[in-house]
Structures are given as structure tokens and as C-alpha cells.
Length: 370
Image (tube, rainbow, N blue to C red; front, side):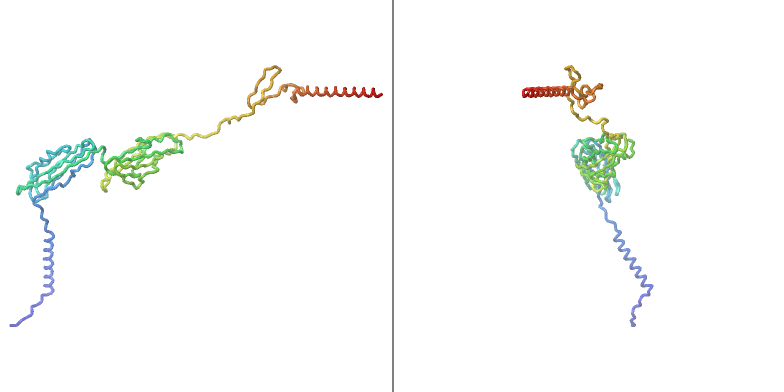
């Protein structure tokens, strides 16, 4: 017997074998990867709708729609009786299924729940146990939904605005042109959701809705970037009225606030603050037309005639001396007192008599000596 070594496959044969091996491996791996996860034969879930109505304003009505999904492999039926018997303040309606309605695999069953919000402070909790029946073996499966709601005095997203003095409007009064007046507006978050405020979300307009250039925001606690105010907290900003011309105006500051739920901001809530003011002309400051009189010396009363009746002059007046009015003699010119002239004559008379007496004595002495 002649033993021969086995012949080696040609290059083409080797490539064919390698290709077949790769295809086989891919088919094997792909089959493993693509194998679908086995679904539970009996299962249903709440696929949409949140049974927690959270905080709602007293007296309001909230409505939600819910969707049940058959995620199992088998057909099921769902008994709606617990929904029909739901306790207040919740009621179910628009139920799309009955106790005998067959819900196939991946099919839906829907219903609506209305929450009529009771008095402030009421916390409502109503559990509902829905029972499904597997149409293959009549086994049962229960799904409990707990409907909840809390009644509050305001909407969940709510804030108020008050001005200087505690009012709800800002009256700047009457301001001179070129002057200014300020009003502070305080924002109070009285809802249950935080609010974000920014000066970019405040519009100041006149009564026609046009921008009001004479009123500006001159300070705020949140700026243009904005800041979040927690429930029960406050934020504030200042308005300044600087009139440029005489006149009056009315308008409003429209304050926008965004409710924040987690990291999501909901639609803006707007509160309008009425504005009013007037401008007057600047009153010029001028000195008085007649300067005030200064106290003067009080003239001494003098006689106005030869009688005993005297007249008194007013303060500061110059009183003429007697005898100077309209006369042409030396008295009228000098105004010398009459008593002075008489006294001078009397003195001269006395001197004359003394001289005569002296001469007489001397004459007698000479006669005696002789």
C-alpha cells in the first residue's frame, strides 16, 4: 500500500471555506442577538396619565384621561366596576370598555377621571383596584391606581404684587419736570410652585399698550438673569418716574413669572400693576418785589404850634423843626431856638449893669480922695 499525504486545498477552496465559516458565525450570533425577549403571558399597565392631581385651587375642576395597555401575550378583559364606584371628589367617565370587552395584546383601554376640588386644605386619596382576567386560563391580575389631590386657596402657580404702602397700584403723584419719584413693587409667591422672575419679563406700557419711556426699572432683587423665588418667599423691584414734559399718564407694569416644576418652567403667569402719575412745570424762585422794611429810629414828638396840643411822627420819618416852614427871616434859615437868643440878650444885659456899677464905685473913690 502506498501512503500518500493528503492534498492541500487550492487558494480558491481555502477562501470559500473561510467565507462559509464567517457566514455561519454571523448567522449564529445574529440569531442569538435577535431573539426577542419573551413577554409575560398575562400583564397590563397604566401607560399614560398620572393619578396624582397634586395641588389645585379650591372650587376648580380638573380632568385627566388615562390609558391602560395590555402588555401580555394573552387576551384579557378588565372589569370597570371599581371606576364606576369611585368615591368623591373623583368621578370616572368615558370608559371605553365593559367587563366583557376583550383587550388584545398591545391593545388599549381608556377612561377619564374628574377631580372636583373641595374646600381649602382638603387632602383626598381614593385607591381603585382594577382586575383583569386572562382569556386563556381565566387567571386574575389586579392593578391598583391611587387618585390623590390637595385643595389650596390659589392656583398652584400664583403670585401677587403690592406697591409702596401695601396697595395694588403705583401712584407717583405729581412730580416737577426734571424731578423724579419712586415706587417699590413686592412680588409674593403664594402658590405651591416656585416662580422665576426677571426684569426681561416686565413690560412697562401706557394705557394704549405702547412703551412708557418716563417710567423705568431702576433696581431689582433678581436682575436680567432672573432668580427663583420659593413658595412663601418674596422678590422686589423699584420703578422710577422721571417726567420730561407737563402732563399726566396711566399705564401698567406687566410682570411675568414662570412656574418651576423640577427643572422645567411652565407657561408664563402675568400680573399687571396699574401705574399713574402727573408732571407739573418747575416753579421759578424769584426774590420779593419789595424788600422787607428795616426798623428805623423813632422820632421825638415835637410841638406843631403854640397851643398845648402835640402831634407825634411815624417811625423813620424826618420831622422838621418848628419855624422853618416857608419863613424868610434868619430863624427860618438857621433854625436856631428862640430860647437861645433870649438867653444871650439876658446875659449881655447883666454884663452891662455890672460894668455901670463898677464905674460908679470908682467915681466915688476918686471923689473921696480928693
